[in-house]
Amino acid sequence: MVLSHSNAGRPPKLCRPDQLLVALQDWREYRTYFHIAGDWGVSESTVCRIVQQVETAHELRTLPPTRQETSNTRI
Image (tube, rainbow, N blue to C red):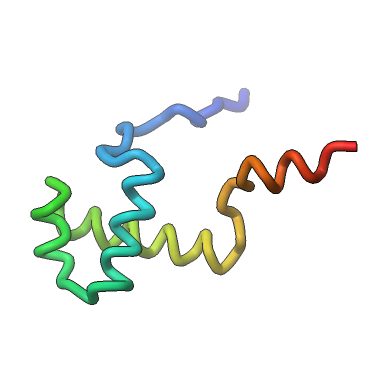
């Protein structure tokens, strides 16, 4: 029997756009995770994890397509 765990785990404290802002804040301002975490109300390890996930998604280009990109693919 195969179990599906697609909805397993705790929901994230920050939505996707906020997670992107956290990563951009790290890249742009080069602040410590401690200070970024304090601004967003999460732990340092959460900030570290978010930045790593966004960097990986950017490298793999797995960010969701924009509306303009999806509308251009319609025939």
